Length: 482
Image 1 (tube, one colour):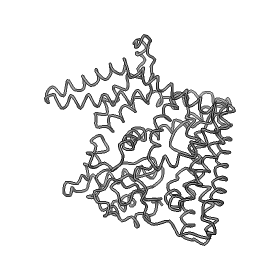
Image 2 (cartoon, rainbow, N blue to C red; image 1 turned 90 degrees about the vertical axis):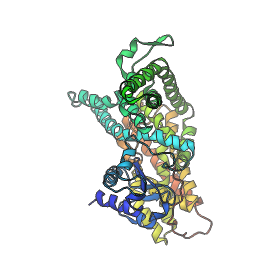
Image 3 (cartoon, rainbow, N blue to C red; image 1 turned 60 degrees about the vertical axis):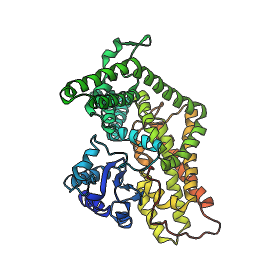
């Protein structure tokens, strides 16, 4: 039976104790810890913990413990709880300070992981959207069930209720984005949400900007992101200049007023144009160059993950879901994980005498099939080198397969972001409905498995190789990967 409390306690102990932890957060699969002293981390024991799928960034201040979807949420909450009751040691921010960091009071630049400015900016933008993924998944599945019932004519009395439940979050997603943006960038979250709420307020239809009436929702999540960023800047400017008595009254007033006017008379129009361009560009890309686009996206996604640049796609996914009801990019990118699975199976077959590596593959394959690729990437293909490249070839083939059908008019999309692999099936839909989308996506997975397997078997090993050493115990992967 899973014991998340014991896992959290063990993780803290093996990362040097609560006094060594400066910052805690998580994404969909990883617990992310910023540690004061990387040498104090017992990486080997951490990797051996039950439930830990991998360790990334060992030896650096930015440590990532791969736990998998669902598990990471509860373990992170338990780590934060234990830190909140811990002691302060020599000025290192632990306990309540560390937890507060995730609630709007963010670490100083010296506390953040050392990474390039682009990767750091993308990480912070991703932090705005990652907490929204559970709601996107839940509402996406409900929308899929409701659509299936509508198409089959069953339970007509229930389908309106399902549509309301599934659509309510998306109708107000701009507010949540504004709230999360202010929280992430050090502003007051409720002020960020208040400014972003202007975007979805029906009354904006009476406002004229650039000679045209605005539309409720115009600019979407991109407008909300920009509005809340502006509100945070204005709020910080006010708080640094107003005395306490006036600060309470004037700071929120000036923040909402100035940022709200800027949103109405500039940001909504500009963000709306960008969002429309994203939707038009994605449709044109797949309709005109679908097979080639899928080949490139499926083949390069794993390297993008390694560089942390894939974070830039999260707002794009969300914008497409908001506009069209699904993102056509995620099924293409999901093929990269399928290529990893095919490559790992080839390694398992080829290196049949390497019992350690085969045991790693056996334990990591179930997670890989469900779209959690880190154990295979960091435990198998990347340390071996060539299998990482041949796995990318499998992803490219799968992406090309799905993209080819897009050129024929059969688009495949996902109603939420986060899951991939087999876990993406309940979220699939497309311009021709869910059934063709599921069939095409399944064909893409099989193609990626097969090409990843064949390419790795043929080119993934030096000539004459019968077995290779097990992957090194120490992972020096850049901390910016996700």
